Length: 175
Image (cartoon, rainbow, N blue to C red):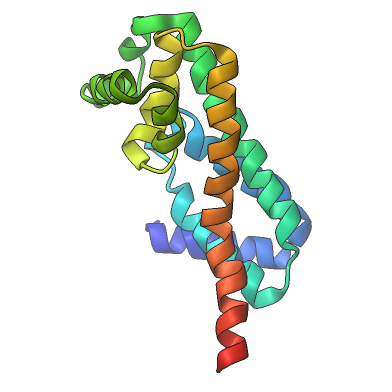
């Protein structure tokens, strides 16, 4: 199944089963933010499609937006926690063994930018998969991490869902 087919099937499922939208968006955002799963899950494209579905169908924006925030927050939090528990041994686990440069790149980025790097890392696919993990490995203070985590989750969820949800409505007003 191609990425386009997966995206279309997921968006169609949410359209037909609106009650499943919130848990599905939460799981997608969680997977997109979790260090191991984000390497395998094309959730960003699917969530962009959900944003357009919101704008097209009138499904409520706020519950899906909150679900995306919670999922993203929890995914990064779990990645951070895994980093604190496993330390550098985490690189011995699949799928990180398939991407040997991922943690060193995340580590260089984190060492250079620290807390702001955790915030910025959310918005880059390869960094999203590694920076929270590296922050845990480097024993970043939990409160500092969580502040960057929640603020970036709010902005990321808005950026991923709002263009489709509100941009489509805005365009329809002018056409």
